[in-house]
Every structure is written in C-alpha cells, then in structure tokens.
Image (cartoon, rainbow, N blue to C red; front, side, top):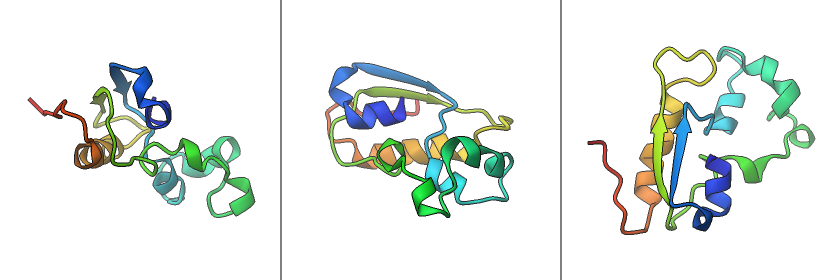
Length: 107
C-alpha cells in the first residue's frame, strides 16, 4: 500500500497498513538483517544495479511533500519479517512531508 499510496494518493480516503515493508532499499542493503539475503531472489540484490529495478515502488524512499490520505500504520515488536523501526521511520517521515490539512496523530 505504501508504493500505491505514493503513486496515486488521490485514489484513497484512508489506508491501513499492517506491518508494512516500507523501507525496502535500506533493509535490502543490510545482509546482516534476518532473511535479507534470502529475499534477494524475489526482490533483487541492491548491490547489483541491473538486478534491482524497483525504485519507483520503494515506499519510504519515494515519500515526497504532497497530500496523502489518512494512513494507519501498525507494526509489531516481535515480527521476524519486518523490523518495528521500518514502519515507525516511515510514519515519522510521512508526518514531516504530508501537506494536506488532515493531521497525523499518535493519540
């Protein structure tokens, strides 16, 4: 949903993302993180330029200053696939870049 929301935020009033894999590039660049090297087959190895051609689909990397729909992002402390800091970092950057009147809140 992160990539689709970046590409066409006008299509949604609200988005719910449960433990989203949003910081794809930074995660895939760290072979020491659990499961990363095994994901090279599906996602490509970012250390090999021709192997990695998904740049337009990178949610965190492609956030920009514009209006976004309301977004609820949920994460988990013990998820073995997506580390909790990925969604948290995504939300922090989204709060800075979001330009519409709908405010982000942690309440």
